[in-house]
Length: 284
Length: 284
Image 1 (cartoon, chains in turn yellow, red):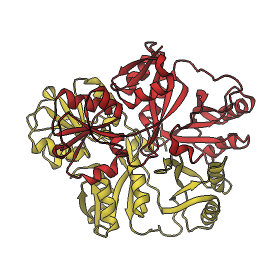
Image 2: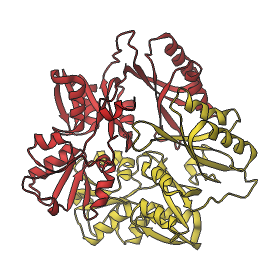
Image 3: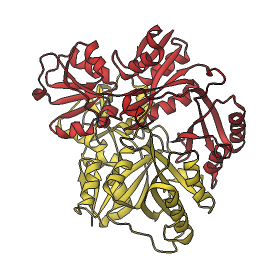
Image 4: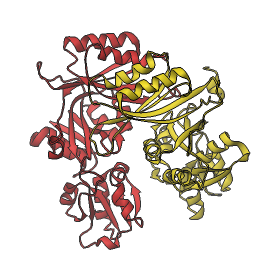
């Protein structure tokens, strides 16, 4: 079983894939998110793992768009606690660092740390682990990367600072994607369904769509609006709600939703992931 | 009257400020969005102009967050049709270009163009006009910038390709911000109100908040969710709806909303901007 993720060894996508599939999976690094979707769509990989939202930095819109374009399904989710490390070459000193390479989301999650060192120039790159690889391959002495501890281990690099993320709540939600839907065993209690739809441009249209769920006591988890490409400010809505799409109540809600939307697509029903980190457990 | 915008001469923020305030305003370029908010909050500039969403690339989350942190108000909006130009030094040829500098949002709006030239390396910088300035100041021959036509004029540079944005619907909505709210004349028909709130974490909470408006036939324009910093996946909702907050129906809706939310803040009531571009007019 091959699982695609974006980036390099030590990328957070790889950590999420390991968390979800364990040791049985063969992991295939892809250059970018688009390549993860393509490799699954073309059958080269059975599953893909992509980030969809971060508790500090918000949604990764590119992957919402790719999900729709690719026609793939969501078969699972992983909540991964994100700890950032400042990583340099062996022998590099923290004082000599002038540039920091990482993904823009990582900079957004380490704002407080970066504010303490205003002389540092941030250089955005497409992946955190790729930043570590670049610094090692080019033997840069004045540069560091922000990435996972695993990336420091995998590339045999030096850790210059640890846990530099703004808060200990820093968590990224990854989606597991596959060609077809893959429902959890019937009777599973903790299941979530994701759909995407667009409404008629009339007053109360979105409200009516939400009433479909409220009237049936189905709890909503998340609603995300994305502009329809090429249509000015018209929106597509991505919605996560409680329950399996094959159960009667959810099936009725979905039929009702289809009556009142101009576009609808089912993305997947999958087990809800619970954060494993102790800071979460304390809050229940 | 001084108006702050982010970037350099020729930045889209400057074009939006000119569109809204005309020739009477003195425009003050600021390095980043955060500086625009700070200069207004500290009274150095009376108004600021910042982008909030683009019809292709989606919301600019940083500015939603800054709006809340800064305690400023929205006093107007500008819809600006965004046309991107590929800009190089005088005498540079399109064939010799290897690197393209611009803001990540500009890359997201010119995906099709960039796909046609896969040998080009994209280098993200903090502002489109700043990219033009960098290429001129460093006299780079192998690099071009994606920016406005105005930036090419202001920096006396050469246009290598014009209108390279993915679709002609490419429009950015800018907000005009100020210290206090600044209501339009009473009786204005085309007014919009923006608020931000968070709900109790119970089933149907967001639905109840939306019913406050639906039951009073108040049309919603946009809803945007942002994670509450440091609270895992709990959300703040930014909502735009029809009408002036001082009118009776809207006042009742807002009082009702405050009853059922855990946090509420009024951001502003301001005249709705209509797109001036002919492609929009045709659709009404």
